[in-house]
Amino acid sequence: MEDLKDHIETKLGDAVNAAVITNGELTIEARRAEIVTVISFLRDDPICKFSSLIDICGVDYPARERRFDVVYHMLSMAHNTRIRIKVMTDEAVPVHSITSLFPNANWYEREAFDMYGILFDEHPDLRRLLTDYGFEGYPLRKDFPLSGFVEVRYDEERKSVVYEPVNLPQEYRSFDFMSPWEGAKYILPGDEKVAE
Image (cartoon, rainbow, N blue to C red; front, side, top):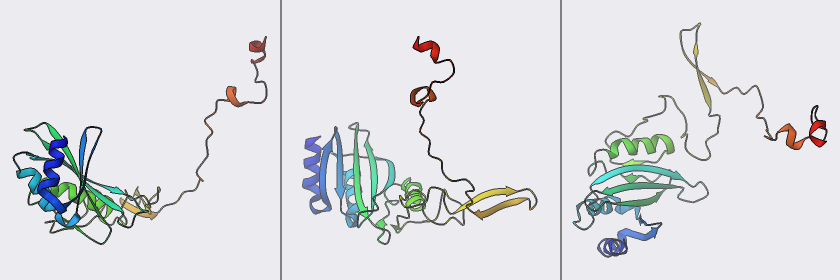
């Protein structure tokens, strides 16, 4: 793994900000502008041979200036090795699409856009994938409200789906999950037999 890490750092140079091995897994932190170069090198280099794109996902860190990590997971079936590539971005700056290198990236990039609002430059069809047509916001962002903005229900009178503002008639409850036998400061009926 160390040899692979050194080889990637040597060949890619400034395109890589850092390379770290943690728990036997190699993670490459790449520059956002160089993601196509990095991915194509990892796919085409005979020492790497990461020919399978397993996944692309987003991670949200709202306290950071560039709040999103776009994480690529790749597999080298020739060497039975996995690698993780990360790039940082924000809400306004797009990451270059890799659909020209891996066609299955189309779904993953649309999913990251739909769930987090991460933009991908030169994507062939960047639109919502999992949420409804009129959905507002990005549900996997940490600052998205737990209850959402609207609720959907089927109205029997109108015979159609109706969108309404969220109505929470009951406040959230706080449960202590303590058994009455553990936390009671009084003797429950029947407990007098145990004390004897």
